[in-house]
Amino acid sequence: MAPVVAAVEPFTLLKCLMPQDDGLGDDNGSTDVKPMKAHRRESDPAAALAGARHEFGEHGGVNMSIEASITFTVMEPDTMRRLFAGELGPERDDMYIYSRHFNPTVLALGRQIAVLEGTEAAYCTASGMSAISSVMMQLVGAGGHVVASHCLYGGTHALLSSFLPRTSGVNTTFVDTDDEAAVRAAVRPGETKVVYVETMSNPTLAVADIPMLARVAHEAGAKLVVDNTFTPLVVSPARLGADVVVHSVSKFISGGADIIAGAICGPASLVNSMMDLQDGALMLLGPTMNAKVASELAGRLPHLPLRMQEHSRRAGEFATRMRRLGLRVTYPGLPDHPHHDRLRTMGNPGYGAGGMLCVDMGTEARANRLMHHLQNTTQFGLMAVSLGYYETLMSCSGNSTSSEMAPDDRARAGISPGLIRVSVGYNGTLEQRWEQFEQALALVQQETPGAGAIMSCKAL
Image (cartoon, rainbow, N blue to C red; front, top):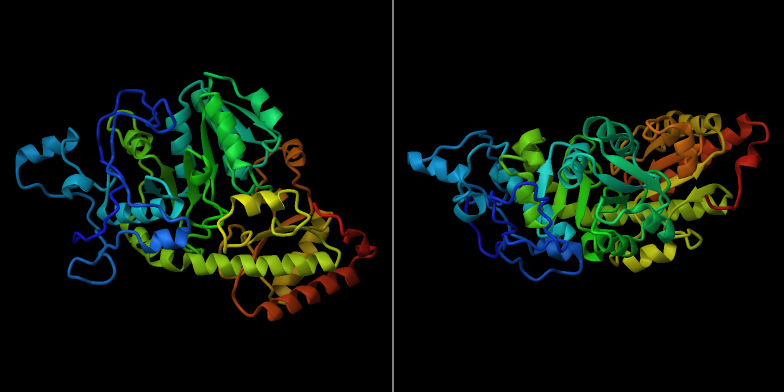
């Protein structure tokens, strides 16, 4: 891969850290490892991305080359020893060992994701859950304690409530992370390793108070890990105090519903520790991103800002119109959303309130009837999980993406049986899609006696 000017070199790779070092140091990122300094950070993520290092192809092509090899040749026998000892590495010397360690194409995408999130480094993984799992295993360790939001993606909730307790003795206290007193009561100074939240909760769309949570976590000696899957560009958690940011890149960042991928963004020292040959979670668990996937994603990042703006614009317009119809709709861009002002304060100007909204139809049966007509009668969208696609995607969260949670846990999180999570796409015209929505809603009202009871001006 040809060298280029104006490179942002995010980390010194495979620098050996002390055993058991979580890579974040004792002062929220301060360690003896001194990575190369990044260029001045732009306040707008799109501007930062445009100013990032551009990787040209091997023969001068405008797109970077795909390094499909899994293993790499050295010219001298001693070079292999020096690579494994950490004396040589990809960033310093443009030298590689094996693609489970580092791959040039995947590494280039990691630089872009790091710039997007405003972190020193990023590592791209095979899925969002592999990113989350690896971070938690690295930072928490056996027998550790976690404080987490009681409303999380079902897979993450299962990881923290079932898998990690069984395999590692990790204990998680789930709380209302909007309640500072409850968070402070839950953290155990010296024992709590991580406070974990989603920027915008899945599926209820509560907006986390990231500065407050960072303050509470750091006072207790813990790290704040934030899942920013719902809100790339909309919010930059690391700039607000988060220590680590994770993504399911499969969603908005990819945008095509055709790639499974994840990312871990944070200090260079964290990535180095997670790639340690002896006890690094990424190195030893091996959730490696394929180089061809990395190349695909790198080509989609430049238009992510435009996509997020249109997702947000349409979601905001649909939510406003749904509210006028009397539907129980939740969208952080609506003025009466309890966290509307918080999002405006934390958010990056110009990207709106995101592309997700929720409609509560009261019962699962009514939710299913509406989704049926939205897909099969009027073609408004598709009944499918996931999000961030150019087509609108809809699912009843209680029986799908939050089904891993026990009924009592779903109730505490505010996930009602009739809650429809909607990822608003941008295909077709806005007026075309709105007409399709109105037609489907009218059919539900005709079919359901007393359907007017599902209409309320009260927000979720």
